[in-house]
Image (spheres, rainbow, N blue to C red):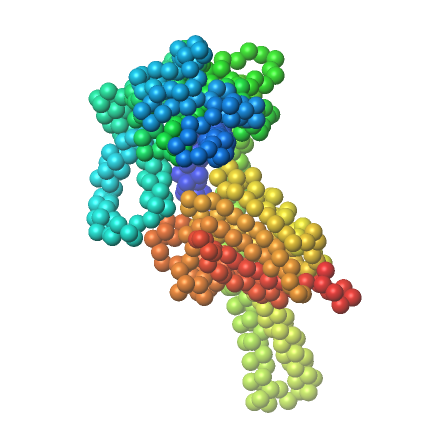
Length: 631
């Protein structure tokens, strides 16, 4: 039998282990070649988050500057009587009070410049034409917002959304039922949705650019370049802002105040203006050094061990330069984004502190991959040999078991036959000799002892297959156990995009537990959160001490569990019958095993739906008490 099985087992081993192993090795080698691209993408994603956060802070600062100047100007004219012309002296005093204000100006309702007058030749030459409505300047707008109706309609068609029904509902509503706040929120939502679709859909982006060019709008030239990964060719990326010529009256129409950017001789000039009750428009030229200093405060950490984050002006020159020992082409960032319509051609850009870090890290990972692949192949070969040996050992063991059963049957039959034969002879009194009777009785006792010994051997053999769970409980710091557990899982989960959070109300809490089994239960709950997390990948482990107990809350932002299944999820082999869970593989034993372990520790485990989406699994364990007080 052994000789006939060996060739078949060898063939099965080659088909099931070696060939798949060779394919895995091949795909692993291909992954090594793409490692540099993957690492670069990871850096880009991380740096993009820093860039977008900085942009949001800068835009908030611009809004703050606008409100601040508006308050300053309105306070300067508060003492004027209605219809009076504001006094220039009060506004000149503002230049000393607020470093943002450089040169104040006043324009009438018919756009006549009252001051500064033509005696200020430089101001009059540069700004009189625009402020008196004689000269139009480029006004900038985000292209996605300018063409948001086209973008939204395009997306509706692609996704078969019934936005038109929603629009009809809005049209049928009474005008009085629509508040300004609701209109603003709807507008913000539409703008944000348009930006996202424009960023993600290349087809929509091309269509919008084509439409903008056909309508005579101009794209703002950007101050940075990108290097194509295929041929290393430098290209200038397209701007997300377009410009069209508008006069001062058109810009201020329907608005109360604002900031107006104007590029003059390749320098950015910022106007502030506000309408006052007397019908005038007051404003100023914002001092360049002042607003640059204000915006630089938005970048808290310009230089770190990994990256450089800075603001590029309209000429592509950083507003602040970190100290470096080597030159750098600031026009080629790793990641950059345009800031705002108010700062045309300005960008927040991120660079790697060490430009060669991607290549060096890719080489290091490639080396590790090569070593792992080599070890993987050796492991497959070694494991295959061990599996074959184990396979043959199992065959031999099976044969031995068969032989054992046969031998035991024979051994049981032999003493029983002897005992029966001697018993029948004694019963029929065919042995009148007392010595022979005693001899046969002695043989019967011996055979009985032999039979008992064989039965005991069989029973002892049957106990070998039992796997009864035993807990070795001892005094355990549950805070330290949970913290160590989360730290052990942190690197693996973070590489998958998870955010890991840990908090504890105390530094040390002692419980009586089998640390290995308790870790197994908590790992099952963490694995459950990991498997069923979709877009929001956040896992939180929270420890809260109560009177005599400690609560361990494992929280996630996954798909959640329907209320009707909440009491069934701890059953063995039970899985929620849902289209979302059907795509996730699982045995259905994790939660059942966790409950058995927690119950064996005199604790409880419960499930709660999490507000805002997700799940909460709450484990409650008794705390060891010392001197009548909880630890």
